[in-house]
Image (tube, rainbow, N blue to C red; front, side):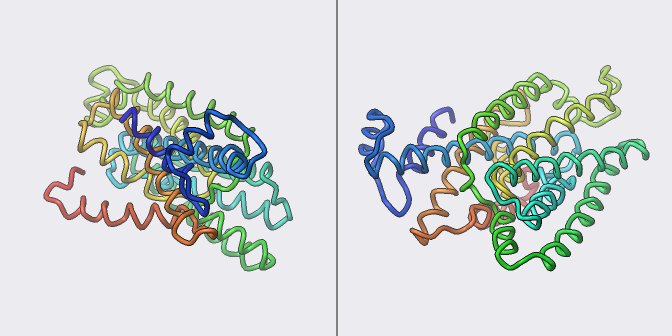
Length: 318
């Protein structure tokens, strides 16, 4: 599993409208940045994009693993609690007002996601903040954001609507090096904090009463984990749009292969999620090269059948 991101990275940066062999990729990496066409494509386009895909995949997998444990719901994913709706609404508001730069769009999406998470928690807190209340509040906030989003898309110019729809389906073309730097710092910090909470995640999966009996402050711990997972999701959505099924399917695969212990499950989910999204992005860029399809379409096509297979299994691993 430690080697899988490196294999996926080499596959991703070698695939596209200009195919490069692994030997050529290795040689270009050793040469460093330059003015040759292959060097420009590799260093300025493909490598930042592949690193962004790995970052987003890891963030979604970590948040999915956390939400499934905190909510004790096998169908929980990073977008269940209104994060996707809030982020999409923030991004479309920016597009509607003509802010289409690679700086403003992710920032607007991040602000929208954090606002949606805050609203969900405030609503749930007024009703004991149980897992069921969080889910219901997230669904309602997501529905409200979706209604406002449709209204804005109806009112927006056609070019802004087209760009918004492409972003909503998952867009990894905004691989700005500055965003990559703070994104990696954000996700690395989030992972370390979640990993320190791994014993508490194990307790929460046993039920609230059992966790409280063993001395865990369930309310406070749920809030901390909810905030960490939500911030990771907001970061991922801000950088790449709405990429579905990564945070839903990858934690199940890791749980089936390596068990439910979160001390091991969290890092393995991050590694596999990053690898999966890098490979998905390579496929998205290669099928109709030089054109590309949204990476969210690829992850849905690959993830949905596997999840249906899990549901049909006896016990389903769920």
